[in-house]
Image 1 (cartoon, rainbow, N blue to C red):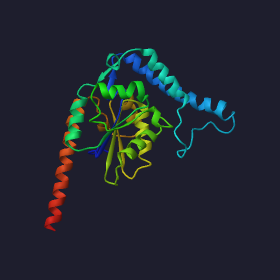
Image 2: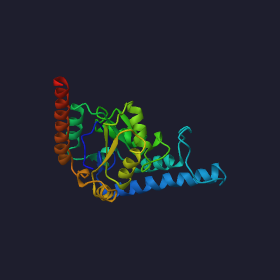
Image 3: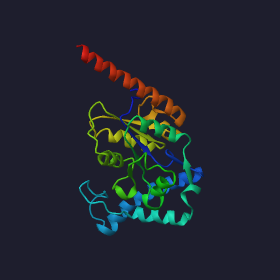
Image 4: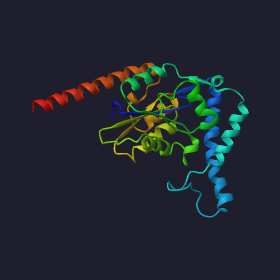
Length: 248
């Protein structure tokens, strides 16, 4: 299935919207992030449920509780002792794509497995991203992290969108888990969810999961060109349909 023009676009943060000045740091953060969240399940099972029953996360109806992984994540960011601008920078040309989406009135949101307080929210403020991302989802807001679709679904819920069958949600990410999360989110929504790969790890997942290579856009310069063409073609198609209805 070829890539379609989006009506909603959701971005991952680390490695997608911003990149780490030290690539090794990004890899370490991703590993610590995933490992800490998995450990929290075992912690809850042993100490809160006395090792009774299966090792599962709370049901969707359960209130959000700060898992032990958040405590670990906070400790990591306290240890870094550096302002975010010394750790990350906006990905090249990302503002070009964000400006195009804003001009085109395409709703956008930011979703991250990372902690908001002391990290993600600092990035939003420092790089003036709040006008592009009125909705943000961070570790504190979720029970289950990507590749579970909960962060994406929660972002859409908070955007208060009435999605229809002909809507298309893009989820742009740089990791294998981002592609799987997008694919899983599509099972819960009435519209298509298109994963867009921004890096090699996600690109491999795109091909593994049966998506076409046009879902791989590994620079924002390329993404801008493709996105602009898709949006223009979509606008022309809608205009033609309106004219056809008037003449009918």
